Image (tube, helix red, strand yellow):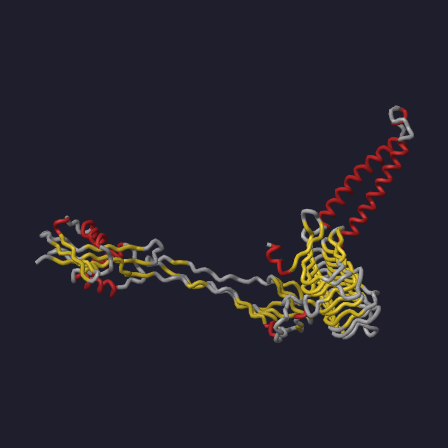
Length: 511
């Protein structure tokens, strides 16, 4: 009776035939292939004995070892478990050898079945370390409240200041772990990926003990870019005769009002919960006035980063960042090196003078009966005075050159006696210095003017632009004579003139 060889795994006829020819070295007339239920079997007609064959393959990463087993034909010698164990040892397989799988494979092969790529050994994958974890205990103090549907929150807003006390636990750091090594089937160690550490840099007002970070002083916690600090906070109820003027190198927090004539100067933030009268507030960072400013124009507010206020009446505000008006601004002078925004509540900007570097955005611009209200965008107010000073200096140098030239025109510069005169030599050198200085100042003016102007100034009004508003971009002015609704003003680049477009068309326009 002829031997029958089958194949356990699903394959195609061509592959099965290749096994018969390449492994068993059978000729075309020494076998007949039959197919049943998508399985192939071969009736072997060769009368010679062919021993059983097996092969062990180890993956490139040495994490897996596979066995292929080919049964004998006729009275060929069978492959034994010992044969496979010995070969595995020859291959250096020392870890994760699946002996029962090998035995089961032998049994299946004894029934005339070909088995390919059976997993007989597995390495142990390394367990990567865990990254360091920070538990920020101070976040429990952040005020949480429900927002109205149309309300927006800026989470960088200083309203979320977090007060802490000396000795208070701020952060607990759970250290990164190194992980557990793995091994290949050849018992080669595989190093795990160590967890990433988080290095906290202590800036001020904080101490560290065994992975725990505590406040050393009363103040507010600041944790950004893995820099941890507790800044001292000067807190008063009202700025009045009870405390006098404040000059402080940290943050000033006023829970009440700032009265007429008083002054606050802080290197960091100034926060006022109440109302400011005609006073002076100068901040090295941001100013936040939750109530508003009710003045008569005899005041000054200057901030480096951002100025935020509930309402503004008759005030003078200078800010190198955004000016944010929560409700309205009337009859005030606002100067921003960035944007002026009034996009909440009625969002009114009306009366006085407004100047922003990049953009003005509001809901209503101007008001009924308000005329000659100038809204200027595109020039940096911080550089305008510098340009004016340089231009004045340039004019003085030009006048000095003119006077020197006039004096030199009265003498004969072709005469050796004249040009060797010490006074004439000094005058010529003076004129040369002035000419060089004039060129230098001119370059400085040109450089300042390049910085002075923003290329794409915009004024965006969601609802109404009232008659009487004067739109200004660079030297170009446009007086609004009839009300306009929902409009974007921009500087038309080709003609450098002011253009406008409906906000409904803005998306297509800006694209």
